[in-house]
Length: 451
Image: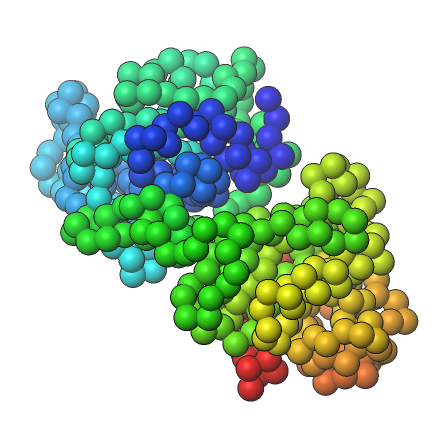
């Protein structure tokens, strides 16, 4: 079984776990790659999502051999047998624990961004990773989760080698694995896209899950209501100005039905529509990180798929800029019928070309445009017709796209600015690069949509 990416793996894994929804579980993702998979599972099961931070304790002279593991809340799991056979002294054990505990605290604080850990006491905990190699970390995580009070532990992964799968069946109350292929050598070989999951993506996904409405009532480790409390209206309800709204929507655009995610913070004075780039979708972790930053600033966001699943299979469709722009225009009219506030566009890669082309329409009334690593050249001569203030953001280490955006800056006749993020490549995967994109986009939209 081959997975497109972690989003695809999470959606397929969620289908195999649907029967667990009635247990009102807590879903836990192993960082970093397990969190995008767990996000999809939590969403499908309407369950709260948290990260499970576990640090393996390695024998000082043979780090790959673990003598135990530690988790949050002071959980400590030690193998007395390995300690005894390895002739490990208390000083050695304490030194390793101090180092790993500091890293555990650092990771937990960064990933949760100040939110408390969800309580597992008496709950069913679904532990999710993007795949299993040796299984040692997953086994340790199962022990930590049980020690944190979980009544039942379910370990769920898309893929694992047969021998590791056999061992892990004894570590959890239930083990769910979609594929156990023979000839297994690495998790990444079973994904078309197994690019590294940056810390920023983990932070963004956890923040989205915490803000999501209707995710099942969770509590924090101190017993207070958690992010799973019902915060929004029923699906299909019209946005209400004085409450937070987050809902899945269906948009009729240019003769097709497009899926989207609409988020409206209470009192939002503007909404930003996202046009994703080639090979991406509304689930793009990069766009969602930016969207989360805009939501925190009080701006609404609409992330939606410009292509249907069948159309996405043909890569040539991502360069059909005229079609994409037409759908964006129709989706804009749909949004105007629901939210009477200024609208902006955030476009990435080829999606930026569609956003600029749509903004150039004589009937367009777009308040601002932001392009991230965009291909404005694909909008062609229509660039000169864009009237909305436009911000072009490009990575300093993306020379071809940088040259194309410099040319576009000269071709645009509206208020225009080109910002270069030093050291960033096309996908802005470098540490802190997407944070800079988020800040630049936030300030541009606040200045030009809200004033």
